[in-house]
Length: 143
Image (cartoon, rainbow, N blue to C red; front, side, top):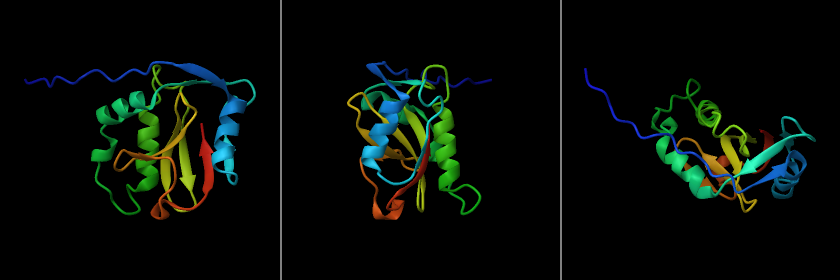
């Protein structure tokens, strides 16, 4: 029997924390319209790490290697799978959310500089804004 050596899942380094209110405000500044759901709103605290920690996780994660199947395994499935991969004890308290635009599903994160990043889960590419093919507005995001 052969065993594959898999590298350990990258762990983030907490640079600082923000309140759920501050997280809400950061997202609202970037996307003035749309619904924002933050668990433990008002009492929650979220950790922030460098974007390089998130990029290391994306390099490790295999979500983007799945095959796109229209209406069976498409953008919302990719987004939920990637967001779920961040749901470990090392990552769950970081500001990483599930993001829906008016036409597409992605993952959103806020880094230690309080910059908002949108991650395309089918390619692991990140942007600070939406491409036309990704939609024009935030429909909703959940953290």
